[in-house]
Length: 116
Image (cartoon, rainbow, N blue to C red):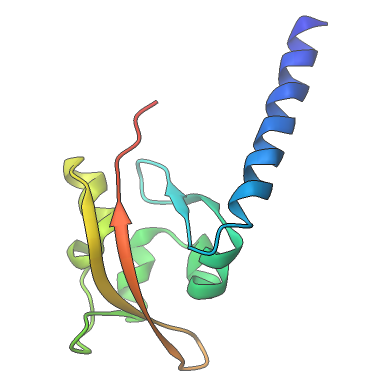
């Protein structure tokens, strides 16, 4: 019975966290160590579109992330990937995200390694 209560409590906490994150006006994406998104809030989904569920390796392959000058970003240019590789935070790195319909959104990305 105790384990069931803990599991239900954990699910409720996760649901509450998702609800809170969905109200924040900035995009938040949590990646696992392999670079696969595990949690994306509403703003993150709005900005990233279908990339919100794609591994970071696909972000560069799609040529939809560009540097401020318009050049295609490499995987190493994407702050989340760099942080996953070396554990170092990145602050306010400017990139552009092009949606499938061609709209371009400039974004500032900050990253932090979270160890559990």
